[in-house]
Amino acid sequence: MIARIAEAEREGWLGEAKGLRISLAAAEGELGQLDERARRATTINLGMPSFPDIAGRTATLPDSRPGAPS
Picture 1 (cartoon, rainbow, N blue to C red):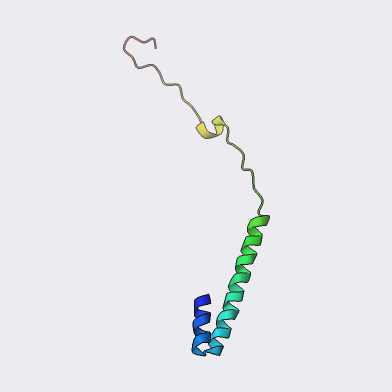
Picture 2: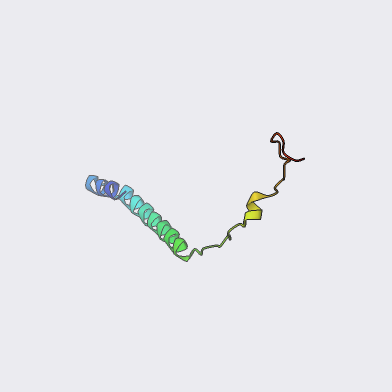
């Protein structure tokens, strides 16, 4: 955008240059707001799930080996 402003000024397009400077200032303001939000962001602890939460249920299956007691 800075290069476009320089081109507009070089070519004598004063209205175009002014509009581009206004757009640049607005974009810089938005970036500043985003940076400020990122600095103020807090970390949220979601906790660590325990094994029962992850595993759900378990089932004991009968032993299917030949000769195993039933």
